[in-house]
Image 1 (tube, each protein chain N blue to C red):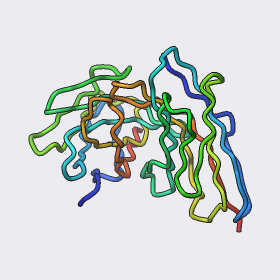
Image 2 (cartoon, each protein chain N blue to C red):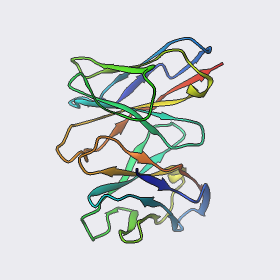
Image 3 (tube, each protein chain N blue to C red):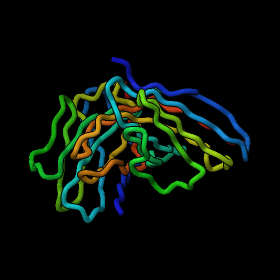
Image 4 (cartoon, rainbow over the protein chains, first blue to last red):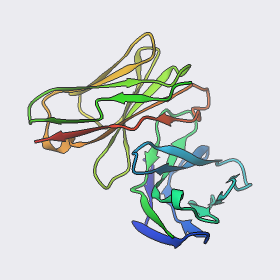
Length: 114
Length: 115
């Protein structure tokens, strides 16, 4: 069974600063995908970034980047130049390659302070 | 291109009743997944439908059932509602890909309260 752990229930960051959200996971699989999703107050889950486990290079999407440590089963999200619109719940998620479902962590509530 | 739409947005039921939640998938998407998100928790996979058939199921009892229609829209039905069924129910659509890594597009969810 796969488990995803987010140990930071809440975090805050000053606008324009950088923040890192942590995620660890447990799996016996070798081929899988990792995701960070954002859920603003509107409740709609939005994909922030995706990482394929077979790729050593860390994924980057504009201000969002990840630090993927496969051996340590760690997958953190770094948000640079934080903006007020980044305020949301952030969920880390795992999916085995070829599977049809995501396993989510319990989320981190991020607040960007003006 | 229309996104994923869900209805109703909010509803209140009493224990023992039945509920039907509806989802219209994003244009061109042929796969629909349903997730339950309890308060303060991450979403949990209920089941997925592909080509009108169930294509995987999470750890939910049979009173959770679903349908997918030829236009790829979907319904989630829950019978004999229990208090613990109170949650946000999220629908997500995607294109079925061999690697199963197609991006999921989520709706805004249906908030169910069971009294």
